[in-house]
Image 1 (cartoon, rainbow, N blue to C red):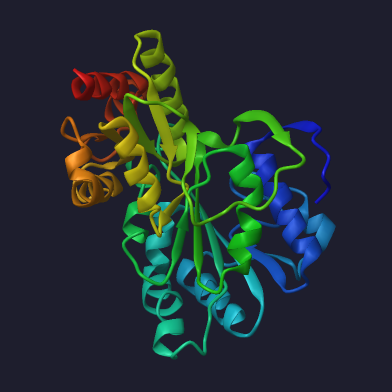
Image 2 (cartoon, rainbow, N blue to C red; image 1 turned 30 degrees about the horizontal axis):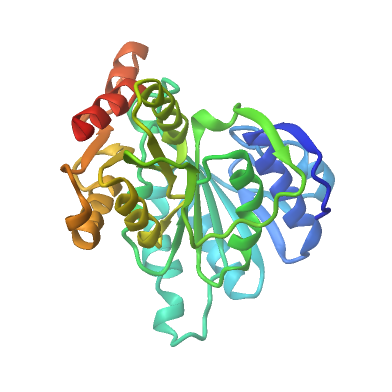
Amino acid sequence: MGTSTTNGKTTYREALREALREALDSDARVFLMGEDVGRYGGCFGVSLGLLEEFGPERVRDTPLSESAFVGAGIGAALAGMRPIVEIMTVNFSLLALDQILNNAATLLHMSGGQLPVPLVIRMTTGAGRQLAAQHSHSLEGWYAHIPGIRVLAPATLEDARHMLAPALADPDPVLIFEHGSLYNVSGELPVSAGAVDLDHAAVRRPGTDISLITYGGSLGKTLAAADELAAESVDAEVIDLRTLRPLDVGAITASVTRTHRAVCIDEAWRTGSLAAEVSARIAEDAFYELDAPVERVCSAEVPMPYARHLEEAALPQTADIVAAAHRAVN
């Protein structure tokens, strides 16, 4: 990477594509595989043009069998390759859950450190696009429950562009959850930006009155809520978790120690959510720093509706975050 500070206009989708291109170009062991990643360019257009650039050995269309091609990715990683497996949407990953949970996540441990599985699995997550109940899940919290894997949720252009390289260098399997509402988000991406530190959360906005803790597709709404709160003289700090496993508990605790109040924003269902885990960690590690109970803003506990107005009502919105912050502050 160069050291120029010149910015470039790009989108989240294009940033992901450039990360894939760099990985394929810099390491002959890297290849991309999944349903429609080649000739079609990926279900969401992320791999568009890569087949023509790198050929069918490096960009491989697979049959419609998540268990089979995730298993093939695990085998390739064990054999010394660096596979990147794309699963269209998170609900389809359930068809490969046995491979992820019982093979990818366990082999390094069960072999006494002899069998690392340097596999990257990318998938689209989240709602907000009227794809109804079967294609609108936010299950990244389920995967964050599993020891032996790393779980990433890039929410910014920089993270979309630069999380892949350190993920490929990780000896453990890495799951990357790309929120579907972010693909068309555009902005300036500094050319000087480098590899992302996968071990630490990011303070996206400093503040002193309350901590708004979130990740992925909810970051934009949370930053918008912080702007609204600032207009009402509430100085909100916004924490982007970025890595959901392992959680950066130190960053969470440090933020709550500064602000003494917290709201956890999570597009998953409230029961058993990542927001519940973050809330528990705050209670364990920063209970005496709290001046108010921890608030949670999550999706309604229903299958995601198709109708636009019902989907919006079911999802966490900026107004919900602002209301939760006011409850904590007041």
